[in-house]
Image (cartoon, rainbow, N blue to C red; front, side, top):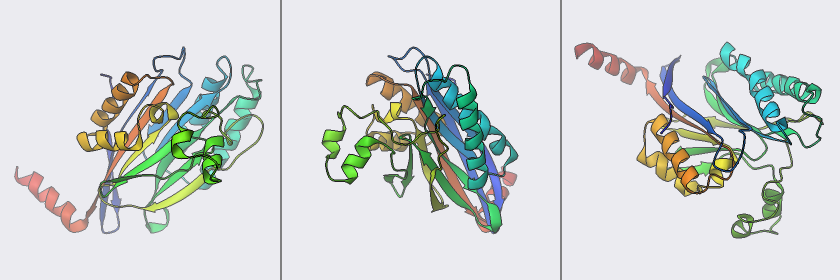
Length: 270
């Protein structure tokens, strides 16, 4: 359906290695005139930004944020401190841009990175806004991030059921964003690296059209990240494609030194 390809990197670890493979796509959808989403999928940092604002303000906000994060990914030295410095610079970029004078201009920023500092390795998710990170582990999908939205706050307060939330008139109203008015700090969640972990990072253009179980279904049907991304995008478009759609699918395989040596020997004898 698209030109999505799967990329991969292998990182040596004490006692073994981790192989990470991923694919990413962003699409305007069926009802929007322009794409205000931006995606960064560059090992070891994988991020989706969903911009908001009149005219092209949202596009400028999401692109500015991703542009500030990209050098961190390229350096390979990703940390929460580096991310927060980059986001502070993005806030200034957005505020100073001639086309982002609207106070409503801003962007979500949500993602996951592999933190191998200090001799140990962990996943770290980051989130501002209502884009999401899902983790599929042991055949169970879990939303790791918590939406910064009016609807989520109402649900947390017990004033709104999940069923009522689906069609709530404030469904698109978020309570935290990267924008011109203030600097914000992401929420972080630190996770162990487990063999077979699969992540989905996505804008709400996907979750408006697919349930969590729908996302899990397409992961189960497609082991290859590019195939999973394509299948989810096609389903989201068929279900209406009401918003811009951005998806990153990430697979992780962790091997011990013994299994890595066995794989090398197997390839050598073929």
